[in-house]
Image (cartoon, rainbow, N blue to C red; front, side, top):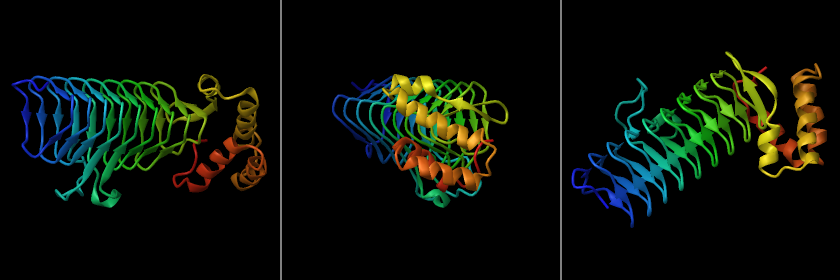
Length: 256
């Protein structure tokens, strides 16, 4: 299962039924879970843990040192969950001391060609990153997010669950759950209704989310008053509670 031209460090831990393609390099302190497939010319550097049943295509670079001038070789990690699809030329960097030392990718994500995830990012589960979408350092992306091709996300931004970004969106503020954004810089354009329907959300749940969006973006209320309105709606709508909780923890302000 390991091609004879692949270079695997003796300190790497390779699970059962792992395949490693021609000319790939697996560094020290790398752990690769059962059933993972690694294509040719992949480089996986030190202190990287990869879970089960991932599919990693040719020329990916995983676990390289962060592109951060403050990094001086201190110990840091990259952790990747299970069942992710990682396509050609994708790059994930390890964390930094300032960001907790870990870059973390969850489960069941689909990461298309040329995606870049920088140091100290946290990506949840079931996300789709289209071609050449990129996260700067310290970005958080919650579950079920879809990033359109060439989306760029500024450092320290957060993107809430089920959000959707249009092709070429440049995001320099936080994107609440369910919201669709587009433009440079990105602006809200409604909610991700189609994505929610595909995930089994009822019409009633989607309508509650739409009302919350209108309160936040179309009512003309100051944010403090909009939050009060959302708090009242959240008492009977857990989906709105998710949006309200995101707003409470936002640090870069919301897209407007």
